[in-house]
Length: 147
Ligand code: ADP
Ligand code: MG
Image 1 (cartoon, rainbow, N blue to C red):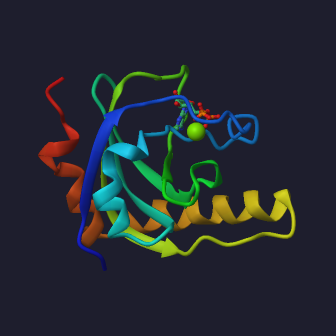
Image 2: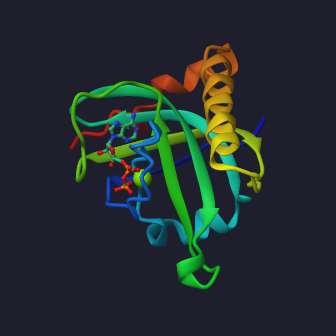
Image 3: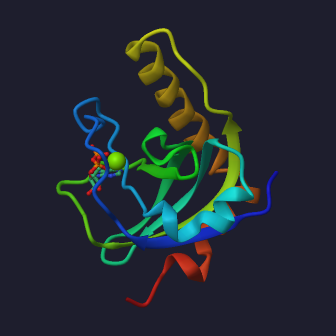
């Protein structure tokens, strides 16, 4: 178990690497706002709860990774909300509580194997978040932001 941590802000545009086409959209947060908290946490795949001001609270699985465009000093924060949305929510306030760690960043021999692994990460997150020790954080006031 890890100490939960809390980050949030407006959903920004990512690099549009086609994650949505792959069925894995990630609602990016601006990593530069969280450089201190991110430097305390290793790169890899985490899970937790996501609150969207006008929509609700959802399970999420998230990659924290190095961004090669920023000289290895900046990471990207890319939560995949485990819910089917009818529309995008760019610009909306997104609040995250990160409660668990799944695995470090890894290289994959093919795109297919990467996608397969992310779906497995999603299943792990789905199941873990039903356990009382993780489920309780769904009630975090931080997720229900007043904006
Ligand atoms: P970008 O590179 O701009 O982040 P993505 O392909 O990763 O583009 O798509 C992310 C966007 O898709 C989010 O900003 C959000 O508006 C929308 N979206 C729709 N469904 C989801 C979801 N289940 N999880 C995360 N984002 C989603
Ligand atoms: Mg994204």
